[in-house]
Length: 377
Image (cartoon, rainbow, N blue to C red; front, side, top):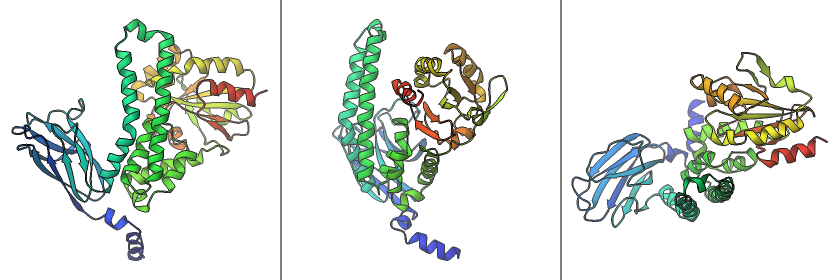
């Protein structure tokens, strides 16, 4: 039976290749002025998998693997690697995948053009697609740096900047999702989909179809399986679904359960003391809470702080004057509630109806008040 199952799996398109060990050769030609003692390092995360001296701008590296993964090429003109967790420095990104990847540049890795296997080429195309948006983001930041501190802190300017960044972020999100939709069989798309958690709060209606359209080979990778679990969790907390149970403790040790709110509209708000955007929403949420707290509405704050940040959690509740009930397992994103609700980024919230079913998700800013105004007459 096991042998038959293995044969079936290997017959799936791309899966056998994805699990077959391969060697990736990286050949580079930089400007001839880059020479000894310069060295190029190939890293996978914080792991250095190869290095080579640069002679008259030429270098060659090798990486091995079983599935394509992102790798960073790092140039150190003095030959010494130093820390990997510092500034980006002179580097470029490729996919470590079967075959040959070529790197060409007149002067540095920062200006290099990469060509290679399908995933490296897809990653380059994605970069070309996103660069105009990133350039506008950099321009907004450069404009801000030219102002005085007083000008930067002016409420009107802060609101204007926030609106500009939100608009650009929305463009970035849509461009990435369009790329993923157009390239469902690329490892670059899977990595982009996972990376979007830093740009957008994933919802099943958006990311579910994108994930489901991907090839079995992508879904079978460790990253693909992990994302699949998140997609299933998102499906379980979609609009109209029964809200998963929550039972956690307040700062003073009292156990509070979501079921305690049955018969009311309750906003389950996932946040943390260290989350700036979460705390920036506190004044708006306080205004809505005070307006509707006597009208069959409540808020249950679920903090993703940890034992180490417990004191900061308690202080944030007091500093932000959060008058509604607050609970936490103090296990961060590993807490049961965060896992059940598929929470991978915050702020994130779920509006639960009197019948215990999810009515809406991710109500931020004026949208929260507008939604309650329609539901609570």
